[in-house]
Image (cartoon, rainbow, N blue to C red):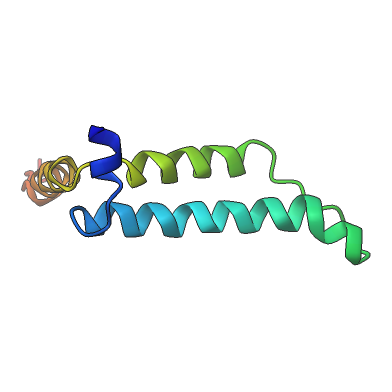
Length: 89
């Protein structure tokens, strides 16, 4: 039941929206690779390999992720990036 609540765009708009966007991109990639050649002759074969399925998995992960985890990840990444380091010897 928790996964269904996390997928609700009203409760978690950021992760659900980004997840839907990424999954739609991967579906478009699958359509281009497998369905489009049935209707059109392509100059060269489009082969994405496993990249499409990795992108779709990432989209599903984001779709079912809670926004609080998402914000924790980005605040942690922001702390790492904003750390000042002394590079002068």
